[in-house]
Image 1 (cartoon, rainbow, N blue to C red):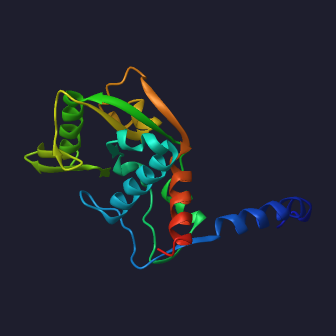
Image 2 (image 1 turned 90 degrees about the vertical axis):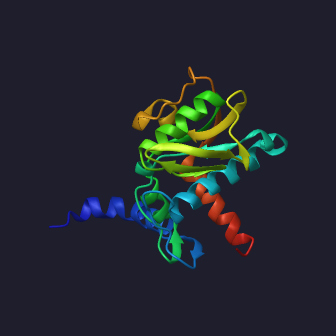
Image 3 (image 1 turned 120 degrees about the vertical axis):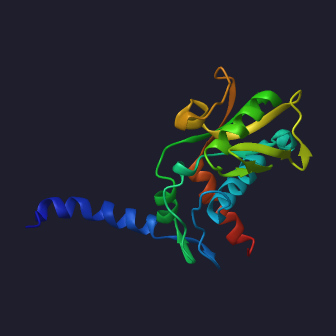
Length: 197
C-alpha cells in the first residue's frame, strides 16, 4: 500500500525530477548506437566532448589533439527522435569529469596499441588501422604519429586514474577541465539544437 504521508512529501521532488529528466534537448534523425569499433555513438560522444572542451579552452583550444574514452563507459545508445536529459543520464550515469593529459608520442603509441588489443575504443582526432590486434597507420589530426612529440589527450578522470586498465602514463600530471563528461554532452546537444542542427 502507498504510504500517503511519504507520498505527499516526495511528490514535489518527483515532479521536479521528472520535468528535468523528460526535458527534450535535441532531436536525432537516426539512433546513435554502440558498436565494437566504429560506432555512431562513440564518434558522436568523443566529438561532442572535445568540442565543448575546446570552447572552454578558447584561444588555447588548438593545443588539444585527441579524445580517448572507453566503450564500457557508454552505458546506453541514444534513440532516434527526441533526446532527453534522462537519455544522457542513462548513457553516462557516472560523475566522471574531463581531464587533459600531456603524453609523449611513445606513450600515445602504447595507448593506441592497447586500444587495438581491445578491438577499438571511442576516439576523436585519431585515425588508425587495427591489424592482428596491433595499431598501424596511426594519424593524429591527419598527421602521422610522431613518437618525439608531446600530445594533449582529453579523457575522463576515471581512465586517467587507470580505470579499465587504460595505460595512461601521467604521474597525475593532468589539467582538470572542471566539467563533467555528462554535462559536456548536455551542453553540446543544447547548443547544437539552438544552432538549428
